[in-house]
Image 1: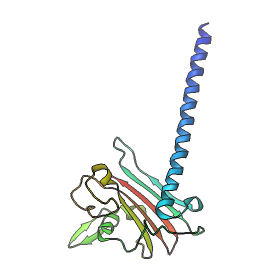
Image 2: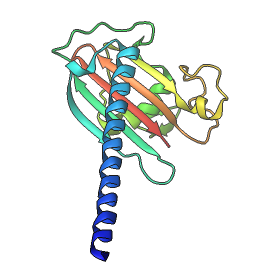
Image 3: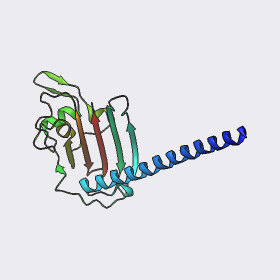
Image 4: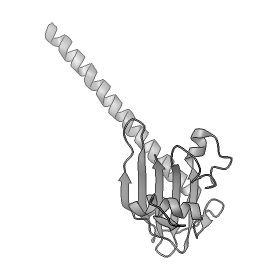
Length: 177
């Protein structure tokens, strides 16, 4: 009698664990499809057709700080850029300072978020910038502007996407500090 109760309890626990794994798997698929749609909406590029070359994820810890970086080779993909969202290079001065180690007026700015991940200095391409900080702290009127990027703030939270038209490489960088 006791043995059958234990078997039932173990069976129920195993079913619950299986359902949790199944639920998690379904959520991952949904999130992946949302991300692909987001990239296509912003850039006009269907990354399902691109080859992922590099992926680095360092988000973690209590606050979830870290970077997400993905690089794709889209050379075998038809690229129809969304020029309503993507801006032509060169980068603004503030974005260049945050993405690459820069010396200006005798001061070295070593944020280097793009350089640390291997995003090259692109000469011919388009980029997208979204300041996620403005959503969190609601103090910037235009979230697509880098207007307050180097202002007084407690965090760098932004999304940067770039396409190098010379190499057809697509770069995605999300920074949360």
